[in-house]
Length: 271
Image (cartoon, rainbow, N blue to C red; front, side, top):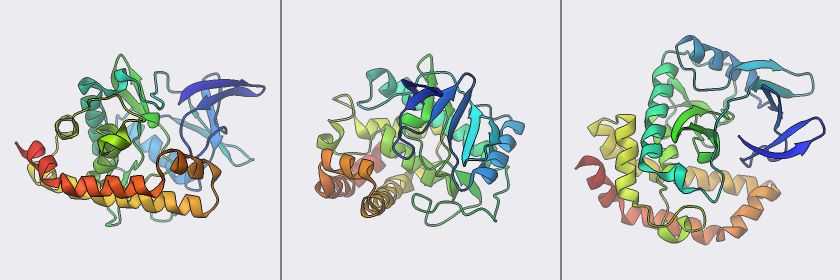
């Protein structure tokens, strides 16, 4: 989470739409609204650390007023419009590598079946391991130009690793038509080549490489439905961003572009 404006009871942190204006840093701690799954997430984060994954915040405690405290993760976080340093091939490859490390550790952590994991952006096919589901630039901490940690596990839910990678690709390649990408990303990004770099960084198998473009299409449809739900519920932040970024016509354009370029992406992944 990037540094934002000062606050009387802590330093407000910028970044992300779900908890805009509600995340504070107090020295070595970050305090934020606790998601409904916070008790299970805290157990999960501690289990990741026990298995050697040191690239996530450590849970400290839940407060009596519905908030949680986590350790502060030092480093740099890219906020939109995304700077060039966050979009280098080295950065992209490191994001894939970090996600692979998360999945290898997560695969060894039993999923709490009693928790009501959020389904809005979760893999519709489900899975036996917990996935992050929101590895966007605002949720990746960088050090020395490489992805060093993941934050904000609010949307974590059981799913397939390939779904998590597809969600990640949407933000980091990005899997957007050039017109849609222009307002947030540096010009000239080669999407097919970057999808290959991300898959290489992750160490994706040939079978999964062949499946990835269609899974990205499905993930994009889920993201559209998620936005539609937030807008219908009257969320002003999502309504504002939807209007500023071209409305539903933009989503139609992105989905058509993905379908039209499916073979190009597949060839780049498998060549």
